[in-house]
Image (cartoon, rainbow, N blue to C red; front, top):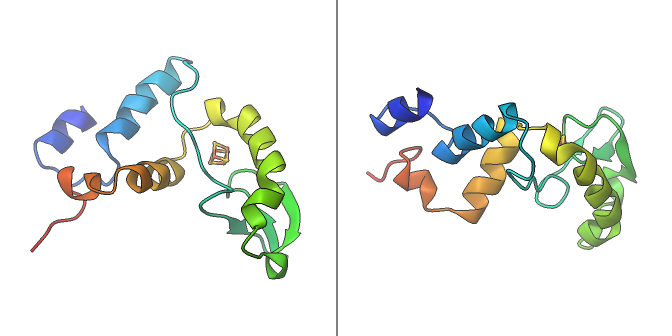
Length: 117
Ligand code: SF4
């Protein structure tokens, strides 16, 4: 239904692929998307600690003031371990859209989220 409305031109910010993934998620399928929280974006909690995302409440043991250019390598093991547990059980729209539009930058225009004037 949402996919049909989006294709008719209704303003829906999530890509069609998000709703296709949602069908797989509710069916209990696995490996239907690859979250990249912890690699391309981080969340900072009230104590200044770095979190992988806003949904995982445990921090990654690093204060934001300790972030440097190599943070992704330092956190990779923890990030991968978290994703092994959470990725198949989560479909967070903001994180899905982040990884989707990063991989397919032209879909921002193709699917009508942004228009060229
Ligand atoms: S899959 Fe969900 S819970 Fe796991 S890191 Fe991504 S957004 Fe967070």
